[in-house]
Every structure is written in structure tokens, then in C-alpha cells.
Length: 436
Image 1 (cartoon, one colour):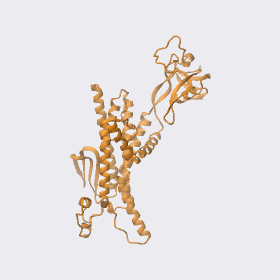
Image 2 (tube, one colour):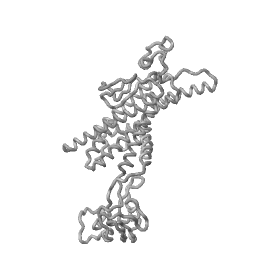
Image 3 (cartoon, helix red, strand yellow):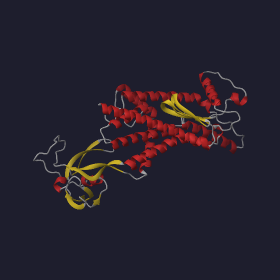
Image 4 (cartoon, helix red, strand yellow):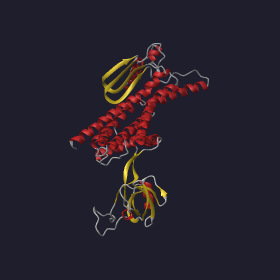
């Protein structure tokens, strides 16, 4: 890398860090806004972890930024019911490592509550608790939809247009390494028909074409057939006669295997341009990405194991496998440093950031504490217990005490830290690369 490329690479990484911080900030706003709207007391709104770099208190909430922008949180009063000691005047700690963890979690929770204050999370109706916990992931989904909409409908999708960029002069034998035409090489059908750079193809064989792929499909299906091709040249429509020659070309089949087929060849190269898509194309792409990421999350332990194997064997990583934030930063740096137009690099960055937000959306809905999905499951379980008690005429049950799940939460956190460590090491030692 030269100096300029290194600077561009670093800028790409910094942009991803900023993008991640913004995504986390919006995620926490997704929790904060409904919590405030429902009258819940929120003590802190923090972006990042570690030492606090900046903070201000407005009303009853402290807002701040911490040193490591790798997460965030809001501190809501009474996420769980008060500990037995506070509620009944008794209770005891002890009983081993996990029992101590449970008691510590209860103590921390008790500190967020004020005596005779009902503005606590566990007392909210179930639907309000679900809305608060869904707010964060949904905010990431909405941000991804906006980013994909900008990408697809604002910038557009790079597409081979019907405008001719150049015309090959001669037909070279299949597998030839020639770079220039010999006098014995036959002229390409396009050159023989009189095509020129700048021509815009309107129809091929009587069929209107909107993209070069449309035109190419007709040409490839018509070896040896004379095709009338309507073009626009200098504002005037003309009709040229194109007779594709039969040529062997290699294609990648649906099963991923390469195959050789005989198709029609003309020798036309198209202009690549960004074509703006309908406004619904961005949301559609976001939803499709949700399905793809969900498939990865479901297989995450297996995917991480496969990544660990490549880490120790040096094998090629699955380009569609999981990445850490370090890997996302490296890809962002590569996009920024690529030898490509600025618009292409901007599009690549937006695509990465949108995909990251889709990953945040899906991952946070995993139904395990401490993730948002785990809190949603606890709220729904509490609601189900109350509904069943009402149905059978029983007294309302006590609120579900999720602090009892602290041991399981501890195991989940350890597993997440382990998987994150593997992915970070793999992204540093054997990274997925856009440039090979």
C-alpha cells in the first residue's frame, strides 16, 4: 500500500467505527424513547463501555459517551422485582458462586428503585415491556432499510446498460491469449453490422430491451440467426442487422459448478452505470438480508467452529460467514482504499453498514438473556402466567424474577465472549477480503 491508500484504509475503518457508534446510539434511543413515553424512570443512557469520556444530566437521566464504542445501554428502574430481602424484610446471600451472582444482580437492581415509586420496568403491562425491548432492534432494522433505500434508490445499482461502450474488432478463438487481432481473424458480428461506441440499443429481434442483460440473453440464444437491432445514434433511430456467431463460453450453473455452452456472440461491450431502483427495492433487500443473517445466526456455533478451523489450518474462510466488528472494519477499510470511483466506494460502505444493522437486529432478538430477545421472552412468560391465573380464577402470580436466570446468562455471556474472540482472531490473522 502507498501512503494515500493507507490513509484511505484508515479512514474507512474510522467511518465504520463512527457508523457502529451511530447504530448503537439509535438502538439505545429505540429503547429510551418508549421507556420515557411510558413514564419509566431511566437513570442512564450510555454509548460504549469503559471510562466515561463525556456525560451530562438532563432531568433525571445521565447521558454519556464511553471510551469503547462496542455497545451501549440504558439503565431502567426496576428491570426485575425487588429482592426478597427488600420485599419481605428477609433474605440471605451465600450458597456458592452462582447464588452470589444472583444476589449481586438483585442488589444492583434494587439500587435503581426508589421507595414507593411505581415507575419501574417490571410493573409495566407486558405489551409495554415488549415494545421497549423491541424498540432497539427495530431501530436497527429501520436504519438498515433507510441505508438500503439510499443505496438502491438514491445511488442505484451498478448495471450493464444498453449503451455501447466499445465493439470488439475480431473473434478470437476460445481460450486464446491474444490481445490484438490478426489479419486472418474474422470480424465480430457487431463490427460487421456497423455498431459504434455510444449507440443505445432499443430492441433486439423485435423485442424491446431495458438492460444489456436483456439484449445479451437474446443474442446468446440466437447463434447464426440474423437479428434486426434498433439503435439510437446521435438522436436518430437506425436498424442494424446482427448475426451472432456460435462461440463456446463458460458459465457458473445453479449448483455452483462451471459448465461450457455454445451460445451466440456479438462482440458488444456495454457502459456500466448506476441505475436507480424503485423505492421498494431497498426495503425488499433489507428483508431478504434479514432471512440470510437469521440463517447464519441459527448456525452460529457451527459457523464459528468452521472459522476456528480455518484459523488454525489457514484454509479459506466462508465469505458469507460471520464477522466480528474488526472484520467489518477491515472490509470498510478495503472499500475506502479500493481503486474505484468515489460513488462505488460510498455504495460499498453503505452496504456494509446496512448489513451490520441487519445483524444487530437479528442477533438482539435471540431469546436469551442478556439480549433483548431474552427480556422479551421473560415479559411474555410473565404475561402468560398472569393470563392462565386469570383464566382459572387464581390469584395473580408474583412477577417473574429474571435474576434467577443469572447463572444461565453468565454462561451465555461466556460463550458470546469466546465466539467473539475466535472471530476477532480470525479477522486479524485470516481475514475475509474483498480483494483476495
